[in-house]
Image 1 (tube, rainbow, N blue to C red):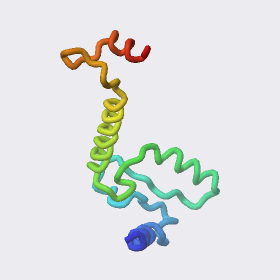
Image 2: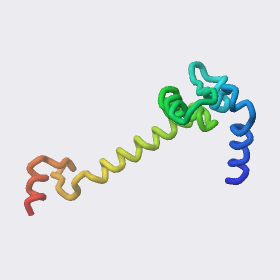
Image 3: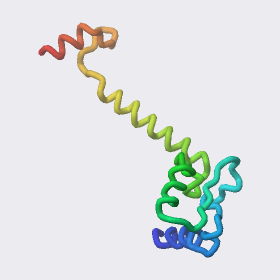
Length: 111
């Protein structure tokens, strides 16, 4: 599977058109305002400058994915953050209503 994927990327990117300022994001023609053109042949420093200026944000389009792929990724990140915060909450110091009061937390920390 990895070899097939690598071959597809190489077939897309490694071609003579690469030197003719071609679109580098696969399937980017479907998205408005999202483009990354290859620069004309130049020096190494200018290539780096071109990448820094024109490749400002990571987008699923750059990897040939659907734009909604980022939504799923961000949703998973948010779920992980909230689960971590939930796990960091003190346990075993709740009052009769199941709520941790500041006094209960302070008492538990002091013992």
